[in-house]
Length: 302
Image (cartoon, rainbow, N blue to C red):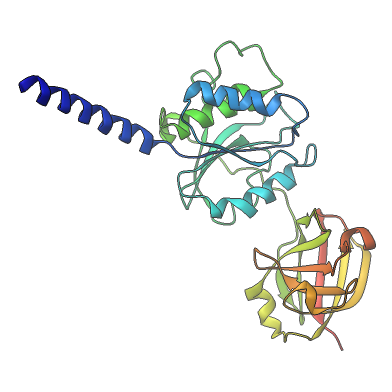
């Protein structure tokens, strides 16, 4: 009888320890500009799997335009709020790999982590939801063993390894390394604002699959113009100081509210003002791109 009780106790303790270990794990989400044509992404996941074979791993995207730190910054902003607190993001768009740029882990004010080079990737996250703290990765402690002479694949050797240890609960945020001194790198761009009866903003990204043009103008800001569904607006799009597009476009709820091939102003899934052609590509038709140099103005039509 005593042996049976002891055996049961041992099993219960094991299950309790296993449950606690499992609960300490969180999702590990990867973003890169590597694409999937070779084994780079698989190598990163292999490193993470080696840290903890039970880690839940997911992809944000690996189709960031090559070297586009700006695009990586926006895709984090687009996605992060839909993941639970505690999620660890490993974002590697790193044209300066092996140089003096810092390698960091940022803790956001809503409790998520980003493992990344400090090269502008944190631009939008630093604004919303904001950054609680940043730590510099101690690469003497958190670098894949045997990779010390490798200078061109920090995504595998440092970021995936550190991110996996953090997501697995093998290290705490405080154990990542010393607190980062100074401000993280931010890419300058035109902030959204209402001015002289118009709303201005940036074009951070395109809805790539369909060619819709997304802006940084949120609904609360646009509502300051007191817009009515069905009303027309003068829209101008600029690359730097050059005007690339100008036209009158109706403000509607969704694509089918205008005839096929016609333009519309609408709010996308992030509740940011956007432009589209119903069943066609606004960006391709009008030669629109995205980035910190692209901006737009929207004002009620006369």
